[in-house]
Image (tube, rainbow, N blue to C red):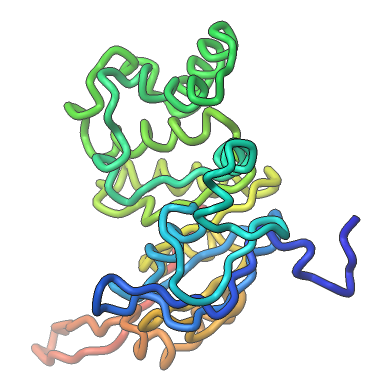
Length: 274
């Protein structure tokens, strides 16, 4: 039972004073934040701000040199993940989709790729077959099932990578720049999918520097700068703070030439509505 007086008990992830470095480069510095169950979170920030590193920490692929991370009230450490029971439970409940799908895809066919997770979880063959078929249909990639993932377009690869995670029905989805490098049609399809997660009960953490999609995919935002949280709030609250967005390199000035021939620059923020 969750104690309403102690909100961290309702947290999927509780990150406290985490510092992480790549050799001499500090990616996260004394970072603290909480991800509540069932929330859709957007991690906003320019490239190199630390948001992708945080996803790796949350997925147990990297471990902080200082600070602590808890998953559903239990420590998330390298030692804990060496425990088969803990690791099985964690990998079943949490799934990460990388920004670059080529990092994630390694099986000879799309069908094998989507079936890999269920195989590792020792599902019965008939259950695996049915789950894979359902996921291929949901993401509209059934026609690709016998193709090599490495011969697909970037948009197709991203859908395969997403299917390989969703097939085990994780409670928590960690999505790293899901619309990056996609053509407009593929990006729109991905956004539609993310919008469809609303009300599904999943906890979704998405990194992005694309402000156009934030209101559609998130209930709450954390703005990253130099490995720290510079601001936190609802999409409406964050997107109206122009000085914050400029300071964190999320808002840029566009130059315009008017009919009179006069050229000037001013910041732009566009919103999509689905």
